[in-house]
Structure formats: C-alpha cells, structure tokens
Image (cartoon, rainbow, N blue to C red; front, side):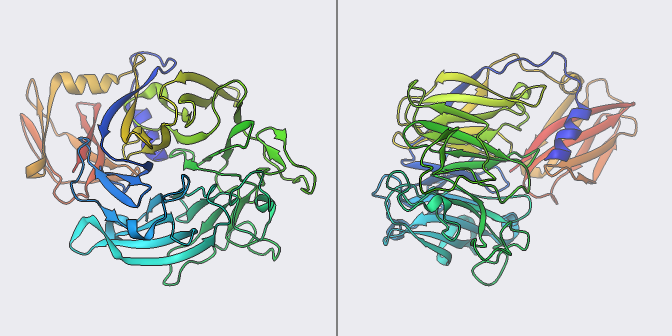
Length: 469
C-alpha cells in the first residue's frame, strides 16, 4: 500500500489544496443484528460478524448474500454482553488457501482461537466442519474478553486479550507476565500444528514471560488496527471509571507495557501491589468520563482510501456509550492532535469500525444492525490527470467480457503504453490491442480486486482506478 500511495502521489496533480475533513456517516445497509466486527478478504466483499455466531457477506453494492458465510451459533456463548463471536481475520493468502481465523467464547466461557477453511465448492461459504482449535484461554469472568484479530505485514496473527473481567483487574492479570489475559499476542499460524512462536517475539527468550505475548498491560483492547501505509499499530483500550485511551505502536516495536492496572489512561490507578512498569507507554489520546464525552471507546482505522484525499492520515475513533466520534492525526511537528466531531450516533451504537479492501471506513451498530459508510463532505481535491482522462477519453469497463476499452475523443492513439498497478504496488504487464481510436485491455488473467490503470500517451500520463469483481 505504501508503494501504491507513493505512485498515486506521483501520478496526481491536485487542483485545489487540502482542507480539514468534514465527516458524516451515511447508512448503507441494515438487517444484520449484533454487529461486532467487519473484515475484508482482499477483495470487494466485506464480511460482517454477528456476535451470536453468524458471519454474513456484504457485497460492494451493499447487498447481502442470502446464505450466511458461516453459522457456528451452537458453539458460541453470546448471552453475556461481552461474549460471543468477536473477531475474524483472513489469512494473507486466503484467496489461494481459503483459510480464516475466528475468536469466540465457547459454552464453557473459554476464549477459542480457531482455524477454518472455505467450502471446497464455494468460496462464499465457510465450512463449519473444518474447525481446528489452535488456542484455548480460560476466562474467569464474563466481561473484558477483547476479541479482535488481524494479520500484520509480517504475516503473523495479532490477538487482543482483555484482563479477564470483573472490576479493577482483581488478579492483576494485566501485569502478570505468565498470564495471556490483559495482553496482545502474536503467533505464527503457518504450521501444521496449532501455532508456533515467532522467533522475534519480544519475550521469546525470557522464562518469566509467556512467549506468545507481544505487549503487556491492557484492560480491554476491544479494537485495534494497522495503518496500511506506515504499518503502525493503533490500539484503543476501554477504561474503568475515568479514562478511555488510544495508543500507537511503531512497526515491530513489541515488548512494551501499556500500564493497566498501574495506570488508567494518563493517570495512576492502582500502584499498591503493582510495580509501576519501567517501560510504560503513555496513550497518545485519551478522554475522561466526567465531561460526558463517553465511557467505552471503540477503536477505528487510519484512513488510507483514495476517495477522500483530505482524510489521508486521520485516525477515526468513537465511543459506544455516547456516540461521539473523534479524529486523531499528527501535525507538522509530529505531535498528535485530536478533533471532537460530536455525537454522530445515538448511545449504545458504535460497536465496531470496519475497513474494506479499497480503504473505505464503515461503522457497525450492535443493537440496531445498521452499517454506515464514512463520507468526507469537505472540498475534495481532484486529479488534473483524472479530469483530462474523463474529459478526453471514454473509459469503458466491460466486466462480463473481461475487457477494458479506452477511446480517445479526437481519435489517433499513437503508440500508448499501458500498465496496471495492483494494490500492493506491483506493476503488471497486460495484453492490449491498439487501433487509431481505441485501446482494448484484456483483464481475464487477473485476480479479482482493485487496480490502477496507467496510460501513457503523447508524453502525458493518465490514471484510473478499476475494480474487477
């Protein structure tokens, strides 16, 4: 994505300057109850997780597949408010191996991390009989299960674990280095066994720390995400009675202690019986409960899509209890600044943020079963090249024929050069034919997904984003 972002920057000349984004959320779908997670599989589908134990597929036109992608309701205990099917992550090679991972609480109130595969005859159906349980963690209480998962660019699976529940972390599990609760874990799932420990995990040679642990000192890190461009890890940790917080971790910077229960947000919490960690990391953003800004943070994403250039680099985060939404970004001095956008949702709504393959950001609501797309209504900068592409060249994508036709308004294409760029920044040579009035590009051999078409003609460069479904 970093290569792609750099390419787009080089190919685009912005006709107006950037300005502060003006964010609204437009409802695009409804009808899925209990939404707690959303994930994409490197294609145009967005998978919607219902905490009861269902996963639904939402397509690019916001319609739903009538049959659930997966139904494991009989295995999931979702009655307690913070238990259920909580997390979904697709293997980086899902499109070839069909493997995905789930995080759920079973009927024995244990956290289960499992490996599944899609049906051998249908990539839109997960096989419930393919489950391989790779990790089981006992939960002492019904709350603070965290449950989020994601693959890093290193290919390892990151998993958030809450402190096990009750109040004030009675077992001080967040600071117990041999307990997996209150931690972020990092494991290698590319093995025939359940999982392996990555050799560069920060505590791999320390007998006093469980080797799966990536970082310590979490209360209930309900949602986290990787910045597509910088690979920074953004973690939102739900607080106790006073502070909610967001933390940012540099790529590969494991081994840190984020403070709980020694600290809640930027303040001391329980230092008695809790040795203040020497490597404590303070949050980059926090808000308190007493100002009625909120009391249960739901972490979001750093926007790296193409549709709203003014939003580039802004992290979007919300509060479940209050419905408030914020953006967080770095200023020119490298300092984090936050902007309160106000109450954009009713109380008890924002249960999860989601990101599709194109980088669009969505919000899911727990009780209402609604999905919203984030929209920036500020003056959006447009590409001069893109305008000229639209004005002088007719761009026709005939998906059924796996063919793209580009026609020049005044005719006379003179030896154009065509390149397609994949979303991981790789330039792809594709077959195409040219006559004086049009270029026809064959896309039949390409994998489905997003691409940038780059056309060089008469010393100029034109670009266009396409989606192959």
